[in-house]
Amino acid sequence: MPTMQTVQTMIRSHPATTGVDRAQLARVVDLLLACSAACTVCADACLAEEHVEDMRTCIRTDLDCADVCTAAARVLSRQTAYDADVTRAVLQACVVVCRACADECASHGDVHEHCKVCAQACQDCLQACEDLLAAIG
Amino acid sequence: MPTMQTVQTMIRSHPATTGVDRAQLARVVDLLLACSAACTVCADACLAEEHVEDMRTCIRTDLDCADVCTAAARVLSRQTAYDADVTRAVLQACVVVCRACADECASHGDVHEHCKVCAQACQDCLQACEDLLAAIG
Amino acid sequence: MPTMQTVQTMIRSHPATTGVDRAQLARVVDLLLACSAACTVCADACLAEEHVEDMRTCIRTDLDCADVCTAAARVLSRQTAYDADVTRAVLQACVVVCRACADECASHGDVHEHCKVCAQACQDCLQACEDLLAAIG
Amino acid sequence: MPTMQTVQTMIRSHPATTGVDRAQLARVVDLLLACSAACTVCADACLAEEHVEDMRTCIRTDLDCADVCTAAARVLSRQTAYDADVTRAVLQACVVVCRACADECASHGDVHEHCKVCAQACQDCLQACEDLLAAIG
Image 1 (cartoon, rainbow over the protein chains, first blue to last red):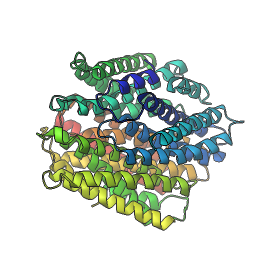
Image 2: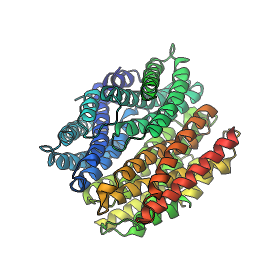
Image 3: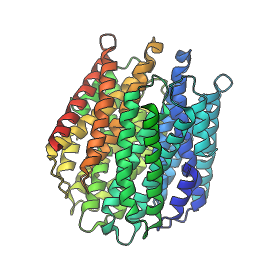
Image 4: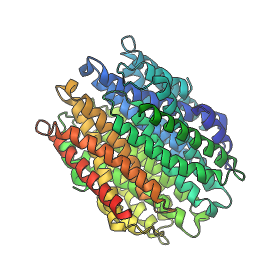
């Protein structure tokens, strides 16, 4: 099964309940994983570009975004002993890092296809995090 | 975009070439991410089960498998300065850890749906890693 | 060399400058790594305890704290294209997660030595993150 | 407490026993964390170098080594339901990746201090992994 279906099926099969909508949770986790994967590839693709000296900020921001979204995907995947404060803190960090990465990648999006796709993945992830933040209050 | 399409699009847009088939690479990365996510949720779901004292080995193996597959997904996502020895070493570690986790989860698969789905995710990932190992020689 | 000296030497040898004091940065990174390692061991030690059914919240919070601090140590280790907003967002997430984990572990600290040591590691890390937040303004 | 003492104290306080010497285990975990941290800083320091176009392989190998050693430090930190096959597979992957990174960093060690220190951290980690592999048989 591709990642999204695996995540949905797994999160639905969990014995605990958190009050957070499971379909929304699964969607956020999948978009965090997609964003993290996009940023990991984008950093590496930027590194292979001819003018790598112009890609320093993009590479660094990609790496940060990959690290934060990987951690967030793990935290959000857990439904045992749910802690709204922890969830909120992690989502807020994602919003800031995804916005920085979306902006930086978008600024190279007309030159590099990987930056354009990565900017979209960051934007989708950021939106999903903000929606979940609004839902949990 | 869901994770699988994001990974495929990103890996295809990379400027470097490694000699490894990109569709196969993207498939392995997606299955590594799916396996890692499944194991993270499974560990947490096992922790919430009534008889958590019977789930110790499953939780521990899930956590190991999540960590190794997360690292492997990152390494495999990189196509710059490709090193076949590193790729092979990482895939071989995944094969061993995914097999341990698939076996352990399968042994609880008739009782816990999350273990059944997780065992399948580990099995799919293990197969994809073995196929890629065969392809790169 | 042990981790702390390695981190200090590496951060000092970086060609870029961020305006953040390097000794303080190295100290935060080392305490993030120590906290992350303590939480990883504590989760696993709790899992081996006779009354694991009483350790569910501790295990879950340990795993969250390990993930967030691992990501934060990586982000803080980077000095190229420094972004104060990203640094701040990551430190703020650490403060919340370390506090949750310090409180939870401290509540088992009289029974389990690993929880007592882990609570202290979380507390030290939290304090270092707050000090750095104050320093960067 | 700095990372090394935290790791030693935590690993000693674990209720389970694996047959692996705890002092040696703690030493390996600390060197894996040191290596991972060194590689994360080295990748970022290489990125800031004037001739970043010559550092592509070093950056990529650093990132791989950081990811594999981070995962390995987590797996090795666990003593519950110890699995020698998993431990061995993870250590073997570390040996290969640390050797690749030690070699690559050493080739820039006379020009960049961070590469020299990182090469040593990889070498120390590789040696500790090989020693543990020999000890567990």
